[in-house]
Length: 224
Ligand SMILES: C[S@@+](CC[C@H](N)C(=O)[O-])C[C@H]1O[C@@H](n2cnc3c(N)ncnc32)[C@H](O)[C@@H]1O
Image 1 (cartoon, helix red, strand yellow):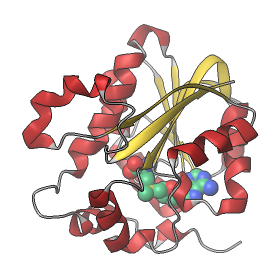
Image 2 (cartoon, rainbow, N blue to C red):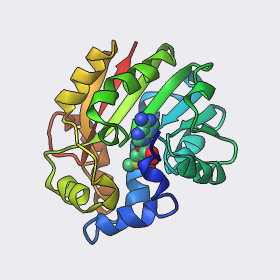
Image 3 (cartoon, helix red, strand yellow):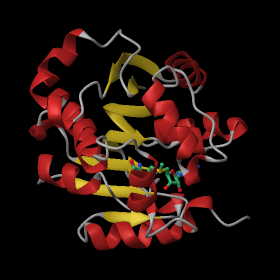
């Protein structure tokens, strides 16, 4: 098997991402926590016992998940062993692995895949989503966050980011279709990440804006 692409970028992920963002929007940690805030606002902490960060990379989301769900078991999976090793340093109590077989014995109330599927080859996406479906607990939810190809700032970042060279963005419609093909039900979907940090007081407005294809990203919430 070829070496996972992100092994090459491990340790430089934050720096490379920051370098591809337009001046003034260099707020990667803010956007990572934005997504976890969104999920946490929809799933109270007492309903979530096991969480999987699928494609966790270097574990950027893990500290926010730990913060919002202090009592939950936190797991991370990524195909890049180098990234996994960094993630385990970031949040030592998270159970992280690059071996999917170590994940399959557990069922998760919440699975989050943030900016992962555009890195998976087209012909492997359905199988990856089916893997996620198989480890969802009854009543569990899977959130797929993806870049919004219609947002010009997102396109700029995507086109300038060295680790997006082989990636292919998915529209919300394509992600929805993928979910349906993988035997998942769509529970909700919306555009998100409308407001950079200087405008963060406006974030409560986002709940009325989910259909506007202007957010930097979107999410599709799925269940079995
Ligand atoms: C852009 S990074 C996102 C990392 C993390 N989710 C975040 O938000 O910071 C994409 C990650 O997806 C991982 N990845 C690519 N193909 C994968 C697959 N088939 N299964 C799981 N992870 C995969 C890469 O190794 C990389 O760490």
